[in-house]
Each structure stands twice: as structure tokens, then as C-alpha cells.
Image (cartoon, rainbow, N blue to C red; front, side):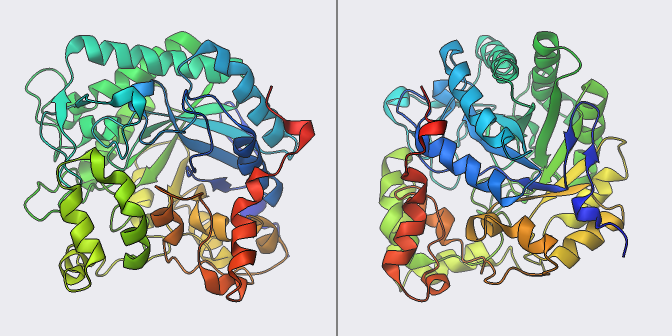
Length: 443
């Protein structure tokens, strides 16, 4: 038998990744209020590296404190955080795994303010109120844009100084960069609004700032939506279509991006990101933490909590899933983008079957896959694939309870059936990242 393409190295311009499997961006509230890191963060990233992925794309890492989506998310806004991130990198590198920091800013998609954002309107490309949670927003001034662009450049430099292997710009899923990119959100009339070239100006300036700060040899990739599907709320504009994203991909490549990471959806969570189920009992218990964030959150809580109102939200949410698969939900769009550029393309979207992934890579549709939920369920998924399994012994059910618990509870797999109905066993696994491993302790 020939070599398995899933486990063939990816030879990118500036880094070599041992296989085609990326741990996609996902994170719990492991860190400190000031953005500094903790031991659970080190343990969290290490378990996926030990499980066999070729590279970890970090959680959402804000370049400014005002850009957090939740408190207790690690940031990269201070120089004295460099040694802390270096510890994370060292822990991951022990397992021949690369670590790519996802540089981010929430913009108007702010789930919980925390002390850094109390009584402040979120900054965005627009002053329109965010449509799902009702987060109040103010369009950014040129001075504010310049500040954020510089912060991305400085954040990339800190990641490089920490010995990390590259950075990813989070331009997908409704966060600040996508708020500029999306025709459904960006209503500016200055040089940052209009056609896709103008809407891409913000991220192109960020790429230029990173190249100016870090030089041409530090790995830089861009995550963005192939299709926005912005009208989760039916009266919203639909947002970017695939043709616009193909043009944006070409602009990112020309500006100096080394790779592209293709996602879906103009907000997070989105009916198609992550695809799968929506557990109302879970969100009814945890959504209360988000209530202070926006003016529509109480409306949403009523829809989640009262069974006779749930069909309204179910219709809004599930109408967009019709006709879309769970595994490989964004594969066709990623393939179209790959055909238009010469740099590597990775795809995220419910991947769990080795045969499916193998076929997608072998066909030339994509170069690799980024996985989150299936790895939360089975951190050793790459090892199970290497042993010849198509699906893991106990597959992820795509219930999305991991995501829906995250605002209030530690991140982990909350599908009780996976643990034989043993709640204590489930809890022990979820809390396992809190154990102390002295050789990895962050100073």
C-alpha cells in the first residue's frame, strides 16, 4: 500500500507540518482576567499535540483587551506575555507539532464584556446593532482603525518572539475582520467600504503591518468565510457570495499570505458553523451569562427556555441547514477558492471520517483539514486514523453541547452517552486539563 496522504507532510513556504490535520481554533475560559496564561491553557493545547495533530491553530487570541469575546481568554497585547506563550509553544513542540497563533479582535461580536469593556460600545465597520444578540456598536474612526492595524502587527511580532510557528488572521465567523469584509455588515462610505477590494483594505493593511514587523519569512495565513450566509435573521442582507471571496483570496495571496483557511458564516455560532444539532436544554442553562451583552439577549433566552417558543428559534436556525451536509459542509467552496490561488488551502467543517478527508485531499480540493469538535470528543483522532480506522471508536455526534456549555462551563465533551451515562466520568475528563504538570508550569 502507498503512503497515506493524510499523514504526508505539508511543505509550506516557511514551515513544514508533519501531517494534514490541524486542531482548529477552539478554547475555554482557561486564562486570567488580565489576559495572561495559566497551566490549564498549557495542558489544553498539549493534549491535542500529544494526540497527533500536525499543527494547532490557537484559540481566538485578541490583539487588544477590548477585542476579547469573553473574559479569561489569553491575549497577546503585552510584551511580558511573550514568555508565557513561549511555554505553550514549547509544550506543543515536544510532540513534533506546530503552533499557529490566531490573531483576533471581536469587534461587535462580544459575548461577555468583562471589566475591560464595561459601558463601552463595541467598535466595528458599522454602527448597526448586531442582529443576533443586539450588541450596541460604533463605527471605527480612522484613528481607531490605525490602532488596531498596529496591534495586529505587534501581536504577530510577539508571537514570533515567543518562538511560535506562525499566525492566522481570524477574518471569519463574524469577528472584526469579517465585519469589514462582509457586504452584509459593512456599510461604510469611506475607503474601507464599497466593493470587495475596498472592504478588504482593512485586512490588507494588517497583512502589510505584519510583514513590516516580522519580515517575509514568518508564516501568515488568513481565515475567512467563503460564503457569509448573513441572513440568519431573515431581514438581514445575505453578505458575501463565493465569487467575492475568490477575489478576496487572490488579494490576500498577492499581499503576502502564505495559506488560506476557509470557513463559513457571518456570526458565531452559525447554523452552518458548527453544523449539527442545537441542544435547547443546554443553552437554556448557560445563556444567562450572555444576558448583559446586548439588547436582544433576553428575547433569545425566552426562545431557549420556554418549550412552546423553541419552534420559532428552531425554524430560524434549522432552515439554513437544509441541503447542507455536516461533514465537509464548506468543502465545495474551499475547492473553488483553491482552484483560484497557488497557496495552500485548508478547510474546516465537521471532519471526522478518514476516508472522507483522504478523498478530499487526494482529489486536490484542499491541502488539509482543521478540526475542533471531533478532536474534543477524541483528542487522539489522528492516531485512530493512523491505526486504520475510518471513524473513531466512539465518534463525535455533532450535538454541539461542547459549544453551548462554553459560555458558563469548562470546555469539553458533554455528550453523556459517550461516558456510558456516568456523569462523574464525564466530569473527570472535562476537568482533566486542570491537573498540574510541574515540567510545564508557566512561570
